[in-house]
Amino acid sequence: MTAVSVSSVSKIFNQGRTDEVVALSDIDLEIKTGEFVSLIGPSGCGKSTLLRLIADLIAPSTGTITVAGKTAGAARKEQAYGIAFQQAGLFEWRTVLKNVELPLELRGLSRAERKAKASEMLALVGLEEFAGHYPAQLSGGMQQRVAIARALAVQPPLLLMDEPFGALDEMTRERLQSELLAICAKTGTSTVFVTHSISEAVFLSNRVVVMSARPGRITASIDISLDSRDEAGRQSPHYFECVTSVRQALRGSPLKSAS
Amino acid sequence: MKKVAYVLIGLAVFVVLWEGYKLVGNPEGTVVLGVRILPRADDLSMPHLWTVIERLSRPEMTGGRPVWIVVISACLFTLGITAAGFVIGALVGLLLAVAMQRFRIVERGLLPYVILSQTVPLVALAPLVAGWGGTIMPAWMTVSVIAAYLAFFPVAVGMLRGLQSPGSAGVELMRSYAAGWWRTLVKLRFPASLPYLFPALRLAGAAAVVGAVVGEISTGTRGGIGRLIIEYSREATSDPAKVYTAMLGAALLGLVVAGLVSLLELPLMRHRRHVEVVTL
Image (tube, rainbow over all chains, first blue to last red; front, side, top):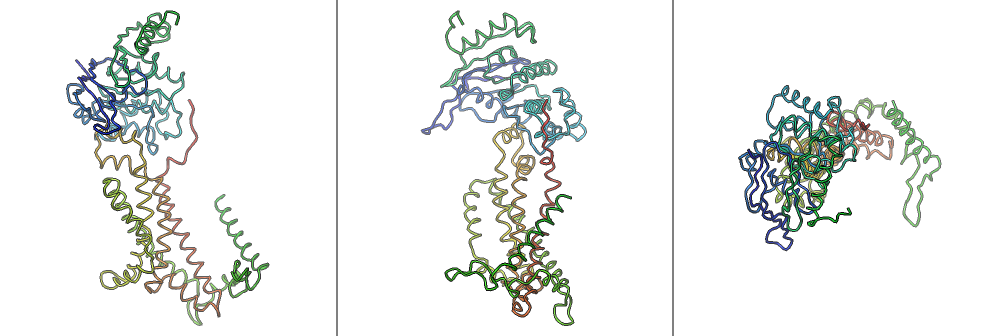
């Protein structure tokens, strides 16, 4: 089963004007159900644009995108994915619980169902005690966890994440990575994860898709098969081999052995 | 408790300034190069505060009602007009803001006229509106219309700014939930605009009071505090304290309206009250 299928997609901003920008050109990408795929590349390579295209937040200039066998637009209307951005983007006037309830509210669930499901999701990210707090009372890492809980609330088959841990410190980041992996394993969601951190991409993914800039293209797709995704996994030789091959792919040429 | 103390300190400062100036100020005022830069401090221009208070308890005219009752009932009359004007103005402002947010072309076309509307002098507008009294609406209502005309402006401008305040993250999030314009308005734009709406409403409240007081005067409507100020000021030479009682009433009216408007804020801005950040 394919969760996401992107075929010969390109995206040109401001087409036909002097400030025309080719953000993506000729992208083909297949993501299998349950797969965790990271998009990595230099800034301006269009990785966020690709994520937005899958989310149907913007429309492709050419090509087609299907999510779970439907067009991206239809998938969005069915809330077939959950999304989290670099900024938590919580609604400051809602409590933590109400923030997580928002997508459920828009789906028309009853009050009791919403509360039960949102509490469950908060427990999943370890924030059940903070249900009644307002976002402004929480630290950045906690806000980001709330945003992830919100993305997971509708239990979407697909999770789209745009540098969700980008603004966090290293410690929080590693803890949230482990939490995210545990959640994905538990719920069996397919995930598209945009990042600019090589180690993060390797640690989290089944596959790392490397992109290059101007125009945005996919230059390599590297399969990762870590035995375990924990501290031991982070120290294993295979982990470092994968990091090296992703780095080489990003540079576009093999590294000198000295590095 | 602290708030009460601040109010009392504020009053005390005012009393000290007023009476202090009367003590040291030149009774004829201070004139520099033919321009009076400080007001007269004599009892005719600046009666002692206790004279004003004492005047409140005496009858308006021999055998009439005490002045304080006259002033309070005039204030209540004007409060009613102000409230009607405030509500109409706020609603019109809200609707305009929503329309301008929804359609960019409406914003482009309408916003200049919204701003232009406030440059039309009220004295030019009032006789026109006053003509409607007794025909399509009761006379007091024309004053409300003038108050609304002043009150809608801050609401329209502030609310538009508020509705446009959510960043692309929030808007994209709502789009990812397949929420249309209306649901985005209700769940995102309205709540996000509240911090902009309340200051705008406070301005609108003040504008409605000014509109009501000035409107009463320029339409010649009887029974309100604006009219009372004019009536009492005619007696200023023989009974200077009297006009100050009416002005005191007008000031009180402004404070009451400001207070009522800020009461609206309490239930809706709960999330702004606790700020202690949990760091875990």
